[in-house]
Length: 249
Image (cartoon, rainbow, N blue to C red; front, side, top):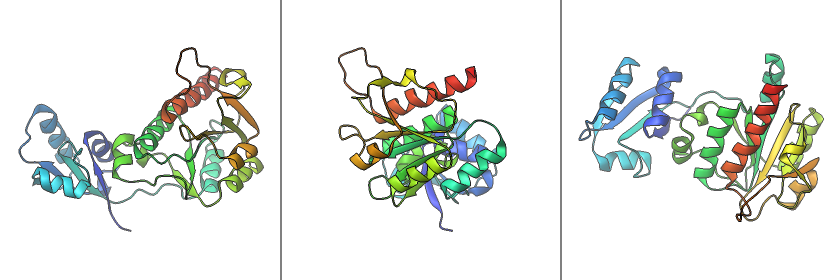
């Protein structure tokens, strides 16, 4: 199993907290000794991590980005569910909340994906599903933006999204798509049961086949001049409405 790279204080700190044994080494900026860095180094030492002093150039090369904040870690990947069946079977076995899945159709920006994963972790969604040919994969930028959620929320890339949506239907999930022209709104529907919420890319929205596969279409009420929300913000609004309803129920 090949190792991967995490960078930034949040992403590396979460990994040190949740799975310290998977951290192979942590590179830190040798010239940075402010309070935040000192606190991080202390936590890394307490977790038993191998610490390596590096300069900014080396950190940038390892991270593949200049936005590493002086912290880069090489880690072993964590074992998350590799299929939707595994996720849904795990949810059923836990006998807690009904399945809540976020489906992203055409989201290619790693910052948007990272933010969506972070929202999913906070709202209690069980997985994110995306097509292999119209989506960004997990990379170091996604992991940094996700602030640890890339390690806790399964991200499942499927060959045929419409087929996967139909398989979710067979497992009892309602497929609810978001569209600006939908006649009913997010607040008109019951989200307490098994649900897959489908969001498309900004501008283009869902692809036509994805739209046709949905059981229902909803819109997010917009009171101002702006016509739509960033996909990660829209995901947060939808998932937390589902969370609100489930807590209330």
